[in-house]
Image (cartoon, rainbow, N blue to C red; front, top):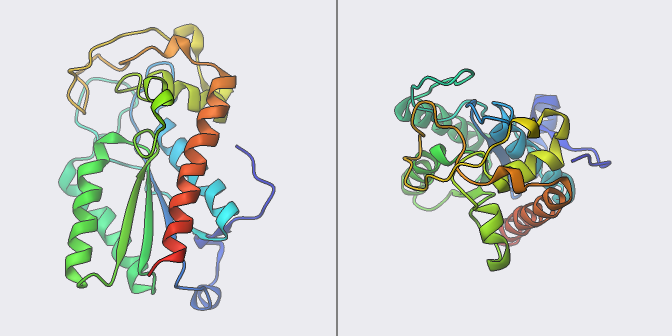
Length: 235
């Protein structure tokens, strides 16, 4: 979604400007992956994470970090995948988190767009907390999982991948990139998180719509804004 308010982007700041930033505020780090999503673009997890983070930063006057655009994806047979194993991703993402800690940010929120990243991100949060005896607090926001009202669960969590909820969100954010004529429903809820070769869709994406997508986006954006405001208000 488009925001009229200028966003404070880390990569656009000088060293002198970064030195003057309020380090009591949380830094917002979007994280996604590059992975086949059938009728959706391979970077849809990046688009979701980056747009949510950008719009939330505009609303909360917090700093937007550059996105970590490659996530945990298992080797497969799907065109467009960029496979990254768990160990490589964990080491890299933790180095990024450490870098912002070294710049003085003791509060960080990781805006995650990909289910395959969750275990690694939670491990990083725990490792950093223990390393600094609780002097760093890192939250992970998974837009499709966290604080979803009961009436929206069957829509947003319709399946496991390229489903109704994810298609809704992409229709709201990048409708020209969504190939609804190619969408098909496939329900296989016992899929592993990394998805079997040749299987990309799990859910009912054909039920998605732009109107519903705008409501989904508003809901999950407000959830993220609430998390950021809570982090701002607490030590």
